[in-house]
Image 1 (cartoon, rainbow, N blue to C red):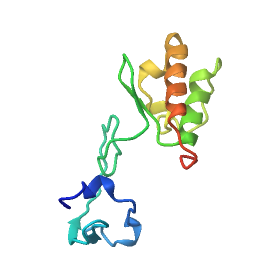
Image 2: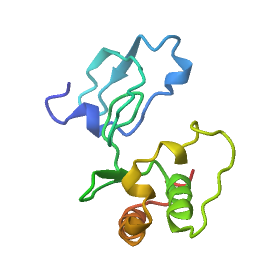
Image 3: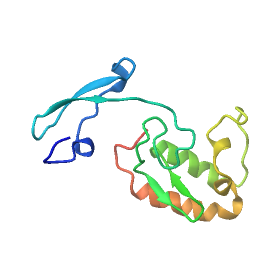
Image 4: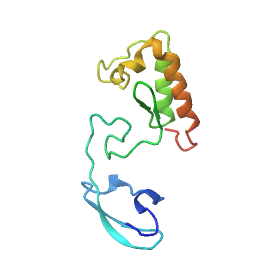
Amino acid sequence: MCEQRDFERGSSTVPDLRLTAGFGSIARTCPICAHSSMVEVSAHRLHNADGHDPHFGLPLRLIEATRAGPLWVYNRTHLEELRGYVGAQQRERRGLYGRSMISRLPTWIKLARNRQYVLRMLDRLETRLTPTDGA
């Protein structure tokens, strides 16, 4: 950890962990003070990761607190998929019964009475998207 800056959050480059066999340890160098250290990296799936990345446990950037619970999206594609489902007057099943993202949504998002509220929250999230949040 660098004394001059929070190195964990301030790092502008993220190593490609897919190239790191078994995740284990990776070498990191602070761009400010050039201090080098080994950082332990592990990945595990969180099954109830409300507002956190399910693999690393880091908080998501695109999250909106609602009266029913957190509403989050990973990127623009995720947001559009949710908007399409929530805004649909007639919702059709597309196979993968019980295994699709839509089937696992919380009930409050699926309820027709919450449609306008959820769409409004998705609009708020859309204003925070950046051009790099494409897919």
